Length: 426
Image (cartoon, rainbow, N blue to C red):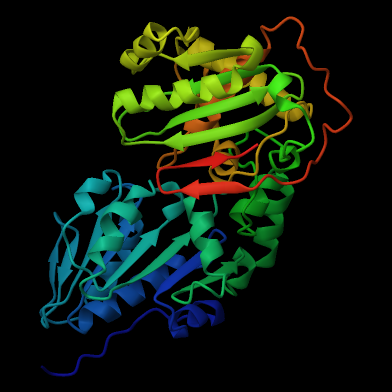
């Protein structure tokens, strides 16, 4: 095959650091206009010219147009390259390909063996696009992946980014590139943005900072982390149990709140088990905390009435919670105020903390009402179980235990994390 000169985009110093680093999985937290599209598409083209199979994956078909535009500009320089507009794919004479794909439906990304995948703005994708589809597609070819995004709170991209900072994850490497690292962006343009944007938005979009609580609902989550003192006579306390039952691929979560201490004292999270086993596990938690008959239980019944009926048949006094937009708004609002006024303490559980920090409030365009939910690709099961329990303690007139002065930062509780769930012993 004759030699072909291809004019790839010129790379600035930061982009060159990424290209030259040998890590298999590279995580780039980038400010706006840093130049992620240039470096990503250049690497895709390089792999395809050597006969490899490369993808550019964007959160949506529309957002993929940015990468597709630059891929085409590079591909037209190469004689014999076949550009398929319908498939958004370029096939080069040596057999290599570059294709632009959408992560709207993670299942549509299954089945293809890859040498390289660029995941553009992956903080705005469902995590399943990586875990269920793209990561397995890299296995047979020992393929590489580059995660490029502006941050979006402490979601799954943030967790991947942390791997690149941890020496134990030798295949990962992470960089944080603010917009100002791009020498082609004028300083006055960045300063104009700083002057007109809210501080949190500027720090996230231009400084590429991972802002805790970026979901905007629960503030001060880390300040609420505490644990139950070991010398308390916990058996004599009064409790409310909140249960969020699994629907589809979600998790069932049991959250137990001590009414007097106003603290989450127990959390159990599990999925993919029989309904009868779910009911037995919930019943076990109730019996554990129902000493002296000082425990009540609130269970969402919208999606799984069978479990509720099993519990009621066994004499468990279940208070069903019917989730509507109004009832959910009320329950989340009460929990939000608890964090705002430092009224609640929670266990140091990474899943719970991540879900609380990422939880979003979106105003519906037609009605103007707020819709509360987890971002795409994340769950909110621990949030809802905690909200049910917290909502329940508001209905208890006089708790048996008055919170002592220890309602601050308590010593940590040892955890036991298993594949099927997480439990804390008290």
